Length: 193
Image 1: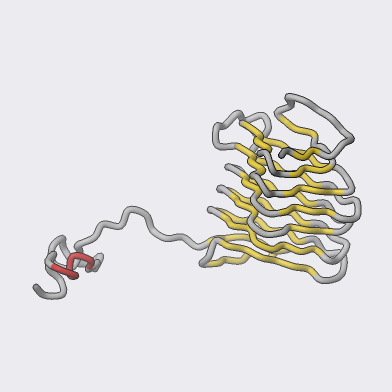
Image 2 (image 1 turned 60 degrees about the vertical axis):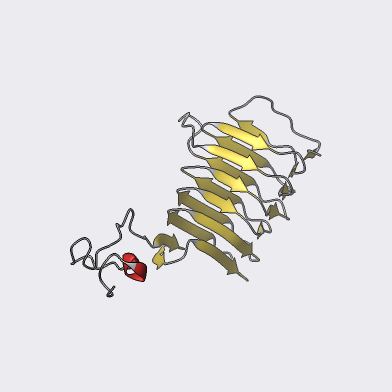
């Protein structure tokens, strides 16, 4: 065959201006999209949906708003500010997210999955929010998977519109306030093994 017919490797040809069988041999089912987010009020676009951020000093917050699937790797707040990541789409926390005294708020308008660690070491609160706690959307789920840790010397709050799952082998300390509320406890660390 030639480089535009549907024979051999030509079957993989895609020219949007051509007709089927003469160079337009594939159908595009969904166009690729860049991640769009803002960092400290500055609008940014990334062609990857994996994010890492750090602040090594000062009181500035790490504030990120993203649209689309997001894999959150290392986010380190070494200054006195907090961390706020809001994602319009599913978010998975793979690496460590940490702060000192600043609060950590990780929120999605879809599922939120914690596979890594979320730690506030000097009294900052941690809030993990999947959707609106009043929405009852089946996709507004919060999952803390086995091996994940959520620890703070302050408070921990888990919120989801649909469900909250804390797997065996994960650690949440201090025991978190949960919404939708099935139980509420406040003192001993919660560790499932």
